[in-house]
Length: 400
Image (tube, rainbow, N blue to C red; front, top):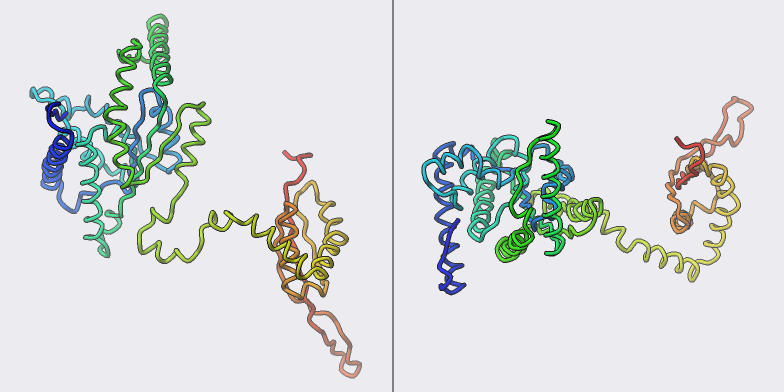
């Protein structure tokens, strides 16, 4: 990794790291472009940068995160890249696997077709240089998106969506989990030695020594933590409290990864949809608005409101109660009161306030009016019939 003199002022160090990152990125990008061609620089549409404190559960939760986003490809675990054939070849040449080598191997892996729709990068970025390389990559992907927009290759160069997901636990929890993992792996290896059942686990030294585990956590807080936070203003940033149980952490992740169409859709697509409000926006104050409407009916249209409530109570509810087990009742009514649209609005609001879901359809029936005795023809008049479908949570009796 890049090293700097500790005596150099912090701002100067930062400037040097950014300059270093640009040199590294440009060298990697030029190599890729020469190797596979400009039109084949097809990176994932969605990239999740997964970071977290030691023992925060990155490996445990990666599968769930991928499922939540609909990914079918395996995660790219950056630490495993250091044992890849590419990294071993660098080491065999007597060279160190630094930021340039990590970025080069990672970007090349991301170009695999299986990652075209999305990829989870487990453990990247970890340094300021890697953060800057990620920013430069996104800038390049946006440029490619603009360049190929409207061409036959546009589907390969979609606007990138980047999520930064940080699983966080406090130092005490991190140390406890690291050591617990070490003991679990020791037990697994002992079972393998005794029975031949299972697979050998490579045990980190930090998972056996409390002080080493503490130092590993401190390195995360001092370096990786700041690197990840620096992406907060640029990409979707998800801070996950990973202190709880497995189920609790999953729920925290799910809450953070809810679909954000406003930000994820292409600009042209979003402009087409933007006038249609999100369901979340509609329901946000729905209860308060319902209460206001009901109070307004009583204050301004009491007679009509009272009559609607009377019909619901005397005509509708006996039928609804009869369908208490199924949880759905269909009621037809020809009551003249519902020719007034306000009365129908009141009916829907009353059912909503009481916890039901009411949907109304209007149709016209032909009703015989009189018969022309000389011709035998029947004259009809049209009658409005309202079908009200009332649904609710039915009884659990005999459900199976």
